Length: 373
Image (cartoon, rainbow, N blue to C red):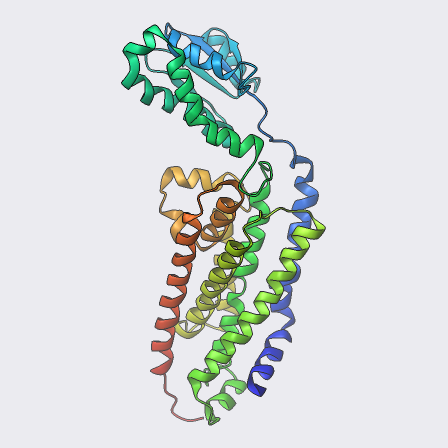
């Protein structure tokens, strides 16, 4: 208990780490709030304005008309020529263009949830149309009803409610990455732990190595102290975002804790891994962890909130190997969707990464010997 208290105080007295893992994320979230606060209501899913170019596919046009009626109110249609439709798209008067040809086409220069809804409309029509073409010639409403059913889950989740009971917010991704950054910056503590446990790194480490206490026990106590301190900092960050800035993380509190704990395990293990394997100076290792965490958050949408969607088009694998994406994707699933299986998968991936890094670090540390102390 005495050793735990001592190590906990050592970590808390590092003012630099406290700044990066607590004060900086809070300041950054405050900056995001002031910068993007006016956009918080900007992208509620109102009816999507689209141009319709009629090239003879009356069945698909009928589907669009049904989706634009008073009951569904999903689309606002502008029937026009292809040339005029392109002009309207370039001038930002519409969100996309539907070309009602034998095989419907969707043209858009925009990104986001609206585009996902429009793609779902086109894809659902093509799938249903191929199976019920003959019947649809007699009753086009058959396809309309099926397309509406396929799109309704997206429409309901985005426009009316989410798994958390909130509405779609285009800037939530920025605040999710702040939490991800807080977690990843916890790797600094793992780095300090390794500095204090390797005799060639510091005077404190020399005292630790000559002490009769088992080295593995010291590392475990260090890990517990780091974990508790990072948990406290994370709770403060959550409290600031939720109660001061009004950020909604949904009502899946158990999964929120699971994601946070898994992320902290991965982060601390990453710091321990770098500290045990790297032979570079402490400041260089700090820079590696800092820049690596920042780049990871960039890929997760910290600077451009649509970055995850763009990377998804390049390779879906990226979201499983980018630490910040594992965290932010879980937040998105908890807030916007009802299927929680991806959250558990992400948690398992993070725990797996953490365990692998810890095992490698342990093997490296146990083989280190010193000529004299």
